[in-house]
Image (cartoon, rainbow, N blue to C red; front, side, top):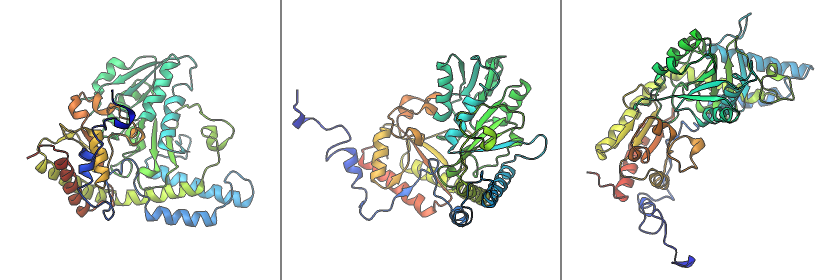
Length: 417
């Protein structure tokens, strides 16, 4: 046995390792990073920064206070809430008004929906149904319900990453208290048949929630048009500030709060709302909606250029979800024969920021639950990297990214032609 001083380096360590070779691709002192992880977080837009600065200077009071400064802040908050709901296809006014509840993130919004809706009306454990490709902030609350005695069923996926909604007839029961299916997948970008699923859930009088965090600002999103009962969003996915998300609730949905100690937002989510973050979120949403079609067209062209360039230099490339409708900015690529975790680290050294799945799981070496749910071969799942473009991505960055990625693969001894 070797002593500690002579321990053999791991395969990715040492001067002849793939990571050491990747470091030879470029001079890291002068090389700028190409950011291709916009599905994790995308840079805040100038419109949001400006709106937040102005709001911070003008609205300094607690919006729950009864004095005039508080009333002024409260009006700014509620005006922003109504405008945001309008942009998302909801209607807050009238006898059948929807509700828009601000949270600290889309993750909190997902937890609030998955835990709060099914437990609102009936104290005894019954059943929830989620897709097999949900974000961890949906899967883990659902698994917590399972631990409390609830039944948890999952909708399977096709090889292209589309939920098999034909299984609803088999899985929906009289005990189902919530169905949750994300609007578009955070790893593959595959868009799901949420409107069709919601129609069947409404017919069965079962509430349906969708996680729309990755969709807003990239594709059309219409809350009432989708027919869902609840929808989660996160501001930092569409160039808004970190630290704020929202849950839209249809007028007829009952929900139990997860936190207590205040009466803000009808008691659904107590705590003082940040007018500054809300205003920044709205400014980003307005900018994203205004520029959505042009941004989507440009990102789709760049995404297709990126995939074609990689395929030309690495003919074994597999694009996961290629046969389905995808978000215009998402590209989940498998490099058969290459360890995905080692490649991810090598790309970082070479100045390419990407991920090996959801950003929330980036510290884990566990293989992607989404790709495993698609039934892909282990060699595909284990060699997959998520690249996601943003509205700030340029053609020059895409061409340079292709060059660096192929150079890294060469240095790692991929054996490509």
